[in-house]
Length: 121
Image 1 (cartoon, helix red, strand yellow):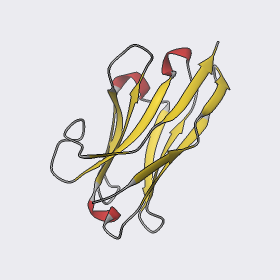
Image 2 (tube, one colour; image 1 turned 120 degrees about the vertical axis):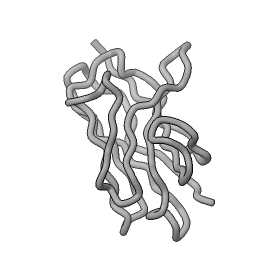
Image 3 (cartoon, rainbow, N blue to C red; image 1 turned 90 degrees about the vertical axis):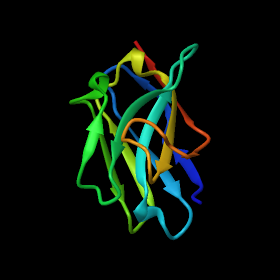
Image 4 (cartoon, helix red, strand yellow; image 1 turned 180 degrees about the vertical axis):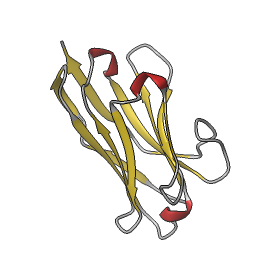
């Protein structure tokens, strides 16, 4: 099992940047595929970005391509989401997930508690 804790959310103006972090417990972090998801107010959770266990392959949702970058540091048991050129529609609770078996965009077994990102216009 792995336990996940997100941090780095906050309030930012449109066009600004934030970097989210997701710290994982356990010694097997490097074997998990990691993903970021978000849940806007009143909407369902949606996929944002994912990265393979070794960091060699990443995949982003169309809505964030060119603006968000996912990365990981297996030595620190941490996955990051660098968010640039933020827009009001990026406002959501952001969650990180971990999984070994599913696809890049679904099937995640472990979740953090989420961190709020609010983008003002």
